[in-house]
Length: 341
Image 1: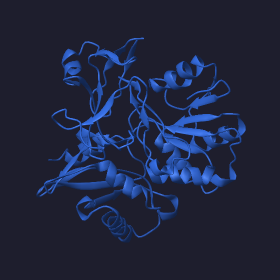
Image 2: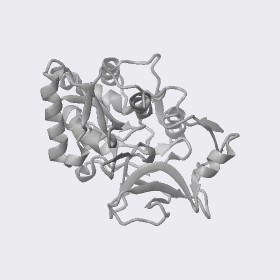
Image 3: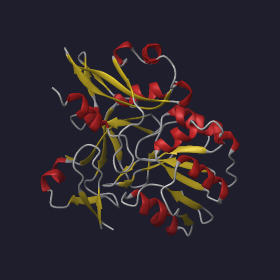
């Protein structure tokens, strides 16, 4: 079976693949039909245990999705991060009741701890991060329900998946250390892993290093074996001789009530490059003085992280560019910044 990976960091490719639901579940996934997670999470996985799949006749707005979850006996929903962010900006979110819904999942990009905590507080429903790729299928089991110490973890690897965090020399790093997320494929390839990119032997070769498949993601693992995925390796920003992970800056910004959504990229600077944040404001902050708000957001990042992670440039926009599968396209924003250089 061939599945096409999305083009969030370059041209998409066709990957060849060798071919926690229960029977009473009714599952709803709103991802586009061209995304491999739809057949896997909406059909193959639930049908393998005899549970049902809910299919909506059209693409739905955030409010229509909330009304659907309230009206139908959906027990598990999987949505993109943008759904949860816009839903949490609905003034009457607490007026909705979801009598059957007990679990929500987010895929495509990890949800930060602020979003996960707020979703549970506003709706009473657990929100779990999932992790996987077109090339790998699902890689982890989400954290245990009620495990508030690991809000934003993607969980532990599934049985048969040897997932590690390694340095640039493919050496495993100590728990808590940021490194490259890799999957051991030798001497045995995990079930469900892709075999190659169709007609792209050079790209196939480039995604392997020694005994490992290299996901291209950066992450951490704690001493108990739980993983956090913090972003793409090629999104890193080199600022003042330091490597800045844009996801850490974004997660900090999203902890401020003014920020509905944001993306952080590199931007030209006299010294090479600096940090720029594109921010979509929450409805209650749109009419605030922008200069005052920029200073407030910069102080928020400096206080909660470090001065060298503070975005020197901030631009407020109505919406962030997205890929065809709904992920924020940092590449488009980065190209916009550097196109005149």
